[in-house]
Image (cartoon, rainbow, N blue to C red; front, side, top):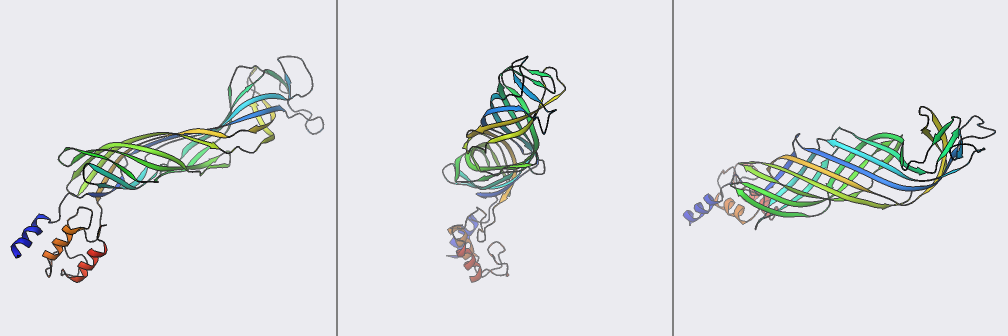
Length: 340
């Protein structure tokens, strides 16, 4: 009986290759995220001229020449919020190697900004009929859609956090080397400010379809992979209507001056697109679970068998509570974490 117990213990002596690893991103990891949200807007704009309060203000008149007064000009537009993030992200996740060529990722979380704020811009894409202005004297020909910058700012927070189970395929291509294909559902959160106004903070679902290589070298592992996601956003609730909001516009013919307009209009529901590309270079160590004596990332019958074979000895691997002897306290800890 003693010989059989020793033989079993030899077979399950703590091994170098675990089945569960805790990974952290290395500095070589990169992330690129772009966001573009459009709100259709239609209404009129007019010069800020007022006979009493601003008699030297801008006047708007339809057509290229002639006319009088200060007249409203109809327009259609798209109010656009855009951001761009390029960074070396921080992040962690747990990778488990399962049976039958399967694997899973849990607790995936990443900080996409990592002290490198992204850029944010707000502009308007205008289409209007030809008009001219007085004070300054300028012509605005109808040339299709033009872009008018509104404000700039920065993206201060951007995260991607796993939102559901992630199970995929694992294929061994060489000893302790595997290719992995696994989709990870995440929630992306982006927030910042532009023109002194906050934006973002709404969750955006995405699927990161990871494809990469896992290499295990003794008690360490490396994971190199990339993923890309292009996801629609919206519909988003319409913004409040604009009523005589100041809109300084650079003149077209001639250039170099500014026409001061007042814009009014009604927004429709918004929509947009989020593009997220991430390349991960990560290092991992075996996940630590009390009672996992053989280092495979789980507490099972093999760990119990080893502990019982070392009962009453000072075996360091089986002495879970480090009191110098393998006994009932170690067994209690192992059973408490059974199946973990």
